[in-house]
Image 1 (tube, rainbow, N blue to C red):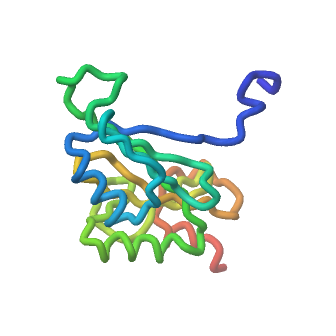
Image 2 (cartoon, helix red, strand yellow; image 1 turned 90 degrees about the vertical axis):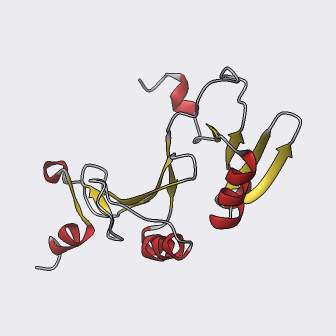
Length: 162
């Protein structure tokens, strides 16, 4: 629908995660991942980080989120951090140097990204201390090939070697 509200959207400004231990989450997102602190509110039990350049996207972490009963358990959620395709391997290396295990789309431990051929984009996954599934994803400049499904990056690039 070209006249719907989404036609005016500029992107996703923020997303929020429920965490079990705010201090542990602060250490992970601030120290391990190196996100820039935007704001913290100890009274409300939350901290906000800027994601990426130009302060266009924010991640909020809440120990007791206002949208959830205080006794609610943390439910595993997913979010993806976009990186440039030429930086994906470097980002994977930096994540693994922090002692994190990376996995492909099929949940196999590997540092080789999977490619979603329908986009196309290459990605790899890892988890935060609460089990939230985090993803590094890089759009590729190639034409989509949805018939391939999900393949390894090496399988994807082999298509262009001939």
